[in-house]
Length: 497
Ligand SMILES: NC(=O)C1=CN([C@@H]2O[C@H](COP(=O)(O)OP(=O)(O)OC[C@H]3O[C@@H](n4cnc5c(N)ncnc54)[C@H](OP(=O)(O)O)[C@@H]3O)[C@@H](O)[C@H]2O)C=CC1
Ligand SMILES: O=C1O[C@H](COP(=O)(O)O)[C@@H](O)[C@H](O)[C@H]1O
Image (tube, rainbow, N blue to C red):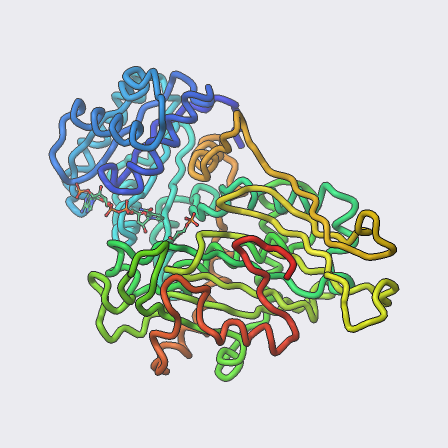
């Protein structure tokens, strides 16, 4: 593994005129450059069908960086390393000229034959591109070659296997970097540190002391222009199969024996293997699906999902999922992991709430009043930090308790934490695959999700739409916890009632 601080590489971005490249990849590369994390020996080739000169491409890269970052300087020098290759990826004849361009840039910038192929394109092209990269000799390099692949990685286990087999014809498993951008988020990466670097948490991190764990990732946005993709995906495939289950794995895994890619992944894989697979009736008991109807978001009336562009007016696609997961290990047996995610909800928020069990005897209230449970809240976004909710004595009162909060706000570098894509690009350039998903994780998470989609696809959701846009989802999602004696801690302010 190459852990050089300032890595050198040629990065080919397939889909370089697309939304992801403009909004995330170019600004992230620029931030790396500004933070001094790129060596001068780098070159970027943008690939897409439309005809563009290098100049026009460089201008569009500059514009997208300026749109994403205030006060950027040094842009001309940064974008002077960008080149463009107009090319339909399904057209076999264009790969040879791409290879010539890559070899020339390799020599010109002395890139040591290191290549990163970033597939920021619709997934149906992933396999074709990988095959051509090999058959047309673009992967014959003297340095490293790495393939970065965007989501979705397949539509179900079968299609994911097929895609994986295609990729593996050209790249070995350790050369494939499957992006899950949640793994690049500062506070998602912090889960391991909070757990494994604090003596006060790890001894409590089990079914003796934790009563339940709640992970919420709610969005205010709807499907926007992505109706076509979303209709075949839904919230289960779009968010649960990847981001939500990855967060579960990080919360539930055993401490790795070493902090390296292999050991961390091995522990995460064990969590996926221990997840109780739900089938048939168990899916109905433990998972709730929802679809938004009309409603009000930030004071504005918004249409129902079925009225969105490129959405079937009778769509059965879920825009919300809540579920209860069980992890059958010594550590976790009996502790429900509740997850919920959805579009057009009341708040944009990703939070993890770890609720601790009540103490065995309440010395402070002899009445119907109960002590508030201790909570550890990990704020993933928009705010980043942790809060620990404790009970303390109310000032001036005689053994009257009051909830207190210990807050840590993560303020990052210069108050500006690196973007998820910035970290992930840098990790990939350094050859650190820890925060990318291994095939074993992908296949196990698809096996879990496929069982749920099987049930949902075979039974029409009679009650859709079943939540109002601007709410926190359908009533049934609350009932899921109520029947276990819990409730969702409110994500907007997470205050005690
Ligand atoms: N946008 C986002 O926020 C996110 C996107 N993703 C994933 O990233 C990938 C890209 O998404 P996004 O950027 O939104 O998609 P866009 O539709 O915005 O961009 C697609 C890109 O592919 C190019 N393209 C399309 N067909 C061909 C072809 N036959 N040959 C060569 N180039 C082609 C297009 O350029 P041209 O028309 O000039 O050929 C364009 O540059 C997808 O897998 C998506 O799921 C994942 C997470 C978030
Ligand atoms: O992968 C995806 O994630 C986004 C949510 O990401 P976030 O970083 O804003 O929380 C989601 O909107 C999109 O549908 C999904 O494909």
